[in-house]
Image (cartoon, rainbow, N blue to C red; front, side, top):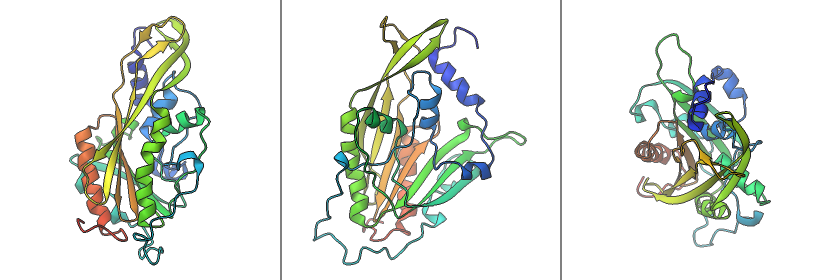
Length: 293
């Protein structure tokens, strides 16, 4: 590697060089390894041990009982399975799709952001994940020329759909996200770096914002994660470029919650479009869908 590569270029080159395993191997691996997890473990300033994050109940306390007026007389869903039709389809994407990887899960936590989990762990905050009854996840990859293998850069969208016990639990999953973010308003992660012949310990400041998302259904939110330029903790010198913000959409329809994130070159406008399409797909598979479905 040449010495004058910028910090961001090094990360980007690492991502380009990663080769994806075959579909069967991907299905056998841990559930939903997002691009942000890859970036967090590849960048030299990231702290080791990144794992996925779930929507947590503040302070690890049990979820409050749903109000009696809104509680359903029977919390058992009338629909149990999450069918593949409830997920985004290639027709919902503006770009051609060549590979579609999908798998189902049982009793999975509602996962949103990997680095946010690391922040909470560093602050000694307890867990208390919101656990789903059933889940189904997929990764859609862009079409590539014949004879070439898929890479991380080919990811168009990653989606997880979770069925919660009741509509109130699904609503709680969205409302809890702000409480999850609050302690990590300005989190500083540190780690070793080696850049242009210099080495030392670098610091990166992480910030998260939760914004409303116009998606239809029972509502949605957009989680935006931003990172500062790396800074040497001894000299105070900054290096590399600021990375692009990463956005994650979380939308709800009845007892279903979907988490969507885009590939490296995805835009906020695309994420908004996919969130609306995801809600439309979820409507037919949700229990107690809202009238706007």
